[in-house]
Length: 418
Picture 1 (cartoon, one colour):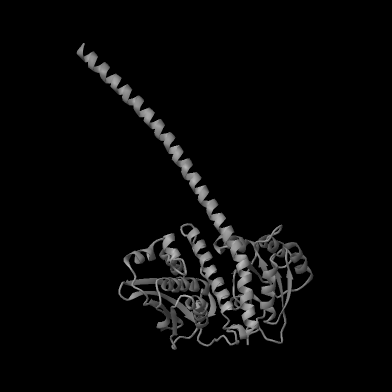
Picture 2 (picture 1 turned 30 degrees about the vertical axis):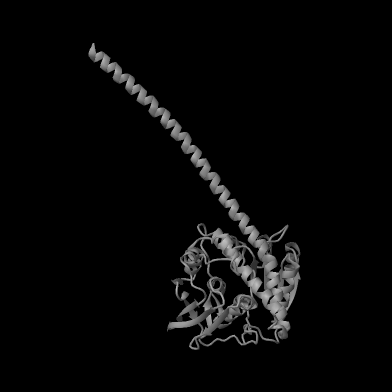
């Protein structure tokens, strides 16, 4: 009898535990389903947020390109305004706004996309000098002095990504100015070593302003600085070390930050560039004299923004191009059918028929003419589409004349070198 009682008790216990197990399993399954749905929703929202930021950044880049382009054209056409404070202020604001937009884009794609570096020829001395000049208005209004030195041993024509370099250096210099009050910021470009056609450069930024407190040191490494702290500074942003690391990694460089509460801070960016030993940028504006002045090359510029068309037209006209401009893809196709062009510059984001679709249709009857994309969209999103459409290359807005001529010269059938 006792055995029956024990057996019955065990059976009831087993049935109870089995029921509990099945109930718990069902609950866990429901919870897992909820978590999966939540993860899916979170991922969906993240993608929507990334898309929104990309679209917003693109919309900001487009008018900014016009502002920066016109500013440079005014400076070129009116050299007497070179030292004009208002023009300096406009240039500084454009350069700095571009850096902020680039930083937003890098944060947006920090964990989802690789940063693609370009390899173009540029004048290292001119890039760094222009960068220092862009801060002149900021230093005039903050009682700081920005000192600049360039190693005389450096051959200034190098191959690399001037946009990423400028973005890194602008962050380092602006951060040094932020932590300096009535002091000095020293920016120096030095050659560390050179072997064959590869040179290692060091870009150092030191400052000797007020002592850097431990709280300030922490904010250098913080992902985003405190808003109230930002309001106290002229430049308003801190150094985002994660962004800088990704940018440095993209060009195989390294950012080194050393803090000393008694002597300010030192930031250094070390990177290798390929050097061009026998090529110099000869024109008075430090742009390559790429095209013979007695040879007219024909260019078709396609962009739905009238200001962008004006800037690109003026840039190329100064380089002896005969330019045709059009503001939509359908008319661009007809012009490409009726005329021979040495190069076509194609805006990507246009209403009705975008640059990708326009290029595909042109490629149905013309496989030869170089078509170069002009885009304000982060290029990591477009690589595959650009290749499939038949575009030869891309230029990210805003761009400078040096880079534009470099890319065109790379693709036209008979480049005219002086």
